[in-house]
Image (cartoon, rainbow, N blue to C red; front, side, top):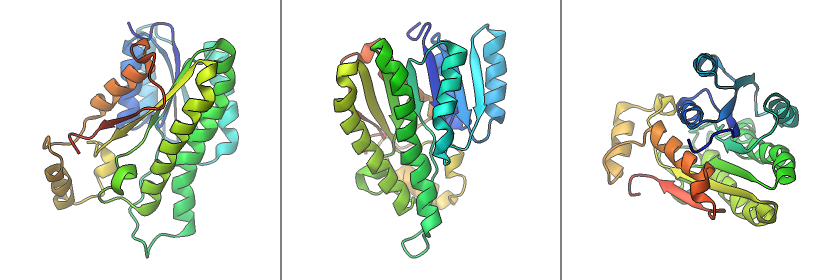
Length: 245
């Protein structure tokens, strides 16, 4: 098992990608703390993990309110005895036009997609630095590359900011034995796309050279690679999973 004995935090763990990552990491031997604003799916998965005698933790939290992030991370550390891996997956999608977007829309998107990611990283680093080892995987978006399709401006901008954050922090944290990388998926087949019309979804599919959407499991497999020893000399990388785009 590639993550045997590792203690993991997954934010945004209730959605399709977060569930896939949490499930795969548990299968690879990790104890998993799942954090999200809504936790129904997390609770069900945690019950499965416990039946297999795997340690798990579910924490309900609104990550747009970043003031409590340090305490959340401290709670995980106290329960698990350490933190080895953070998967910063929590995110919100907005689809407003230039004329429609309001300051509160912009702030909400940046608070979750960028600000919460930074302060979660800041909170885990104190424990990772002490043990001279840590792996951080951020889930970005192909929208940061060219503005994306059917997403709003603040979403694309926040994900672009996340990429720069990863690049900078890879330099800042390398001497502490901490690696940080980012996955840049294209359109993923999750409920995030449920508010699009069938025509819009078909347009997205047609634009992808491989002719289909990305699955949550494919993102999870990439996250596992970046969190495992198999990527031990990779840091500051941006990994595209976009079907050829």
